[in-house]
Image (tube, rainbow, N blue to C red; front, side, top):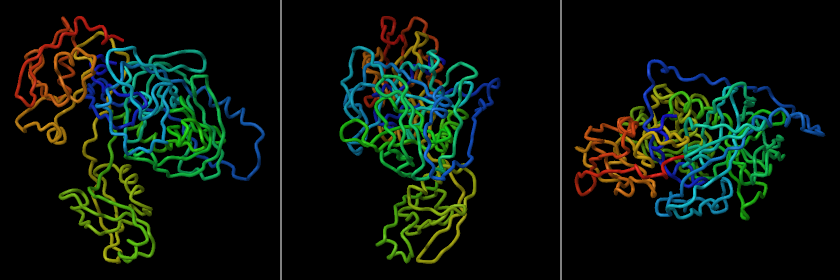
Length: 504
């Protein structure tokens, strides 16, 4: 991976809340030579499993087939973020844990500063013979170096193709061929009571298999933007994050992510991302470097029995529209506050979360048919789905080498959100600083989140992508910056010529 992208990453607590740190990777535009996105050679098997109630004496054949597809993910990072820079975890129940290695417990960040590099352990699943691997975003979030260990003893360098904090999915890529890729099942076809097997690397003791059943589907527990978890009682422990949840035929149906626990260990309530969701996210990350989601422009809520009576409904199903974004897709389609969306393109909508997930899957620009209840009367509307604002390419992660400058600095294109957050005037143009590693030369020079890089080595900066390009060549490893901060514009020199901490 190009060094410029390795260094412009958020430095975050490994195993922290996915999605809370949102530094933007200014990804490269594809050249004519590689304009076509790589093709994912996925194996998909959606044939139904037998549900005849017969007991199976052993699953050794299944495990023998799928265990080579599950890898150990080893990550290394610099000292963790200071508590003041950590995301707000107050809304996450303390008994919910997503496991990553043997460091600080989830929600209890260690103090940052100059110190030893941190190491963590997770799991991943090989999904293509040429080296694409599914794992959790919180496993690789903030990592400087990622390696995967295969069952045959090989340890390979991995690059992070992309991360999606909103679903806690990440995609890795290793350079190898003819790898043992797992077959993907249909997570939408599983039922409560189906046997599932969880495979991963808990506590670093080696690959471990546990068995249970599907306890529930459609769970929303972690406070992520998009949740539709499979709940299982198969034992999941620290190090299992990113591992495989497979059905009785050995097909991947979920990516193990979290447990509900009062003790920190397994208590029979684990959660996995459905493979259908993980597959959609992966394909978008590989193709576009980001996840594109549909958007209606409505504030919605669930319908409870009391609301159903007031709105003249026969049952408490659907998504109640509380507010319509002016000039958004729903507004243009004629949707109004007080409408209840009961179906989208012929599929019944159960609640507000179901509508959010369904709309997110829609392609921006397509026309969707909505069934709506207004004042107790059913009506149909056509809406042109928009693109969810604020979607950006995910930060890339890889082994940091001494090839460029401004290591430990994350940048993003200036948008309305950043201008409001940091009170940046409209006339200011450049790349906004989103992250600065506490032990970096840039931090020593006084660079802070919210500063805007106007020039790099006397060359104007139009946005994040240009900032990355201008730091690709290290030269004498000193960089002259003209930056804007709330006090006005000023020049600073970032000297990395003596900074050994930027080297992997």
